Amino acid sequence: MMRQSSAVDPCRCPLCGQSNACAMALASATIKAEAASAPPCWCTRVQFSADLLQQVPEEARHKACICAACVAASEDISKVKLQGEGA
Ligand SMILES: [Zn+2]
Image (cartoon, rainbow, N blue to C red; front, top):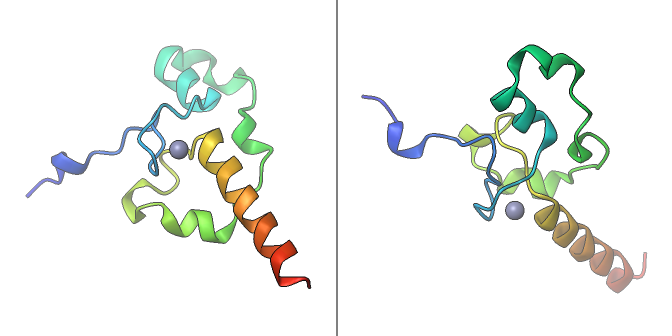
């Protein structure tokens, strides 16, 4: 009873299925020996909102990065929300 059909690809965004261009995933996939000295990915500098993380399938969490496009989209949405609510 393996769940091979839903294997998580660490190089793909779990939300849109596009390449997430995660530097860390890329490094570990190509040169494992140098993974420790790999340049930090952009994904370590951005804050993923709780709403965005909740959209990621349970099995993909902490395995596949969300791509920049989806992060940007979620930020736009949350900004619009904040402005719209006029807090
Ligand atoms: Zn995406």
